[in-house]
Amino acid sequence: MQLYSTNNPALRVGLKEAIFKGLPDDNGLFMPESIPVLPTEFIQSLPELSFQEISNTVASTLVGDSIPAQDLQLIVSKAINFPAPVVPIDAHTGTLELFHGPSLAFKDFGGRFMAETMSYLNRGEDKELTILVATSGDTGGAVAAGFYKTPGIRVIILYPSGKVSPLQEKQLTTLGENITAIEVDGTFDDCQALVKKAFLDNTVSTRHRLSSANSINIARLIPQSFYYFEAYKQVVKQHDKIVFAVPSGNFGNLTAGLLAKKMGLPIHHYIAATNANDVVPAYLNSGEYQSRPSVRTLSNAMDVGNPSNFTRMLDLYSSTWNMMKSDITGYAFDDQSTENAVREVFKTDGYLLDPHGAVGYLAWKKYHTTHPDTYGIVLETAHPAKFLEDMERVLGHEIDVPERLAALASKTKVSIKMGKEYEEFQKWLMELG
Image 1 (cartoon, rainbow, N blue to C red):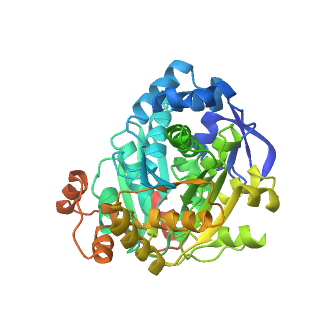
Image 2 (cartoon, helix red, strand yellow):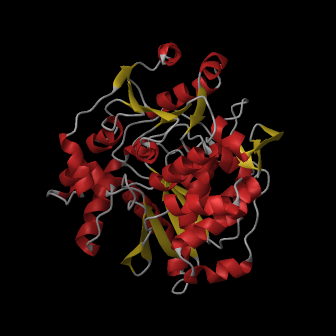
């Protein structure tokens, strides 16, 4: 597998280099040199295949001979060992539950696959690998769980102070060992900017072997495509014209869905669903992209004002607005609408959406009013209990909390507080042993 930079199509690197570098030196993003199309026979056989079988075929088709087939199969079997069920909400709507992994969020798929892949590729290296990751909520917990106690790998997670839920914060600040949490006085965009600057800083990269675990890393993107195939197989016998509504922040999840489509998965349409941080829906409506500072919302993991993976989306469509708009429709919703959706769906259908899934649900329902012959799959990206205080306030009653989350309540948070200026972060990294 060869990859290039979105800023330099002439650049070519192998999979190992792309994964460990995270970002190209020119501050682009790595993309596959070519996106192979899966055989029609494979697509037709999806309903008869297990999730692991599907994942292994998709992974091996993309990765090629960069990882031997037997080793890749072992990586997939260790990483993708929990389900992704499509649960019906009503006659036209299902929700793809992506919260059945260790940290109860969709990022477990990418986090675990990346951890297993990096651990495999890191064998024989003398110098410790340092992973920098910015999180707006769920990435941190998934990465922390995925890499916890992995030999030869240290993880540094940057998160915006006061802008993640208490249980999300506990997931990334209570493990210790090889996991360090940095609490930044700023927004997710500030955290992401610190990570990117560190990667482009020769002084830091000379001292540390750096890599990233955000969705900017190609090893996160590949496994996120798996569950689109898994969801499609569960409903294709009952429905055609399948539409995915994707709650979106940094847009890695939607980009992975587009990758699946490019590989031959016959998805009818995609919906980019955002909260008030609506730069991509605005682009889809106008053809003009304008990033801006993120604003805080109820669906905090989507509070991103300059989504990194939008660069990959442009690349997939050769920066052609009309081509992208033909495959993706964008909608944005405020917090009040989100709260109303949570209450309405629970009351009417007995299904509990988290704030992010509720945004996806609203977007799907809006699209469905003008496309009544379609079937919508809403990505439910995190367990509702991860947003316990807001969920109980919105519903007016207590909700069940899984034991693995409830156990976090008594654990002590350990974080390093830091400002958003790069010089402070750079100094800390340089002093790190």
